[in-house]
Structure formats: C-alpha cells, structure tokens
Image (cartoon, rainbow, N blue to C red; front, side, top):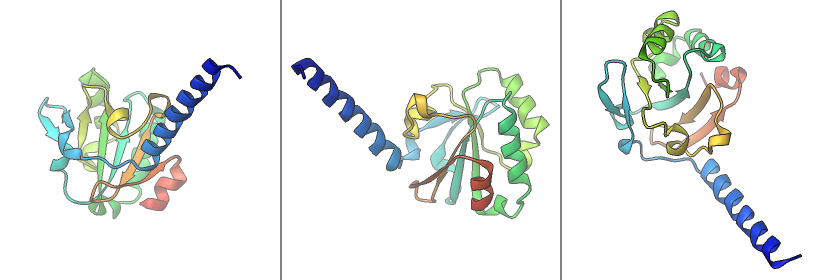
Length: 159
C-alpha cells in the first residue's frame, strides 16, 4: 500500500472514531445554547425545569413529527415527568405557528424553539449526515445523554 493510502486510511479511521465517541458520549452543557421562541425571545436550555428531557428536532411540514406529538398526547402522565423541547430550524414562523396550532402543541409543552444558528446537530453531538426528522434525543435531568429514540415504539416505552 502506498504511503498516501495509509495516511488517508488513518485520517478516515480517526474521523470515524471521533464521530463514534461524540455519538456514544453525548453530554452537553445546555447553559450556552440560545434559542428563540415564537415571540422572538431568547431562551437557554438551562432555563428548563430540572427533569429528564426529550429534545425533538422537527419540521413543520413533517407528518411523522405530528405523529410524535400524538404519541405524547396519549400519555398525559408523562407531561409532568418530562420536559418536551421542540426545536426547529424553520425560518417561517407562520409555518411553525400553524404546526403548533394544528397539533395543539402548547397543551403539551411551552418549549417550542427556533434554532436560528442551525446548530442543533452540532450542539447535540450529531453529525450532519446522522440527523433524522423527527430527531428525538432523551437526556437525564443532569444533561447526560440516555438514548436516541429511533421509532414510535421506543418513544412509547420511555413515556
């Protein structure tokens, strides 16, 4: 194998290792992240009540995102146990407000935020190619990553 190929393989291996470590040990200091609510007020995730939290990355025109809201609504007891934080990068607040209204999202959570910096994947330790819609991340009350929720059955189990 040529020297260039060996160097390239080492670089690729290091990149994969770093991404894997970031994915496995997702823990973040949520006090530095700033989001905007629907009234354009800035908020930090450190303002959330000290509870286990579901961070849900959504897009207003995503049907699966609406399904997630319906699953959460089916478990009203979970509303007191967890923070449900909905975060979107959508710029059009009209679309976001329509999603919130259509799904009665404010009956579930007051935490609907816009990520103007488009940094959700970076802040939560995801690679850009690794983000799904909806992306549901479960953290404990101390900000330690517990699990990435991949499907509706997993979500229902945690609720």
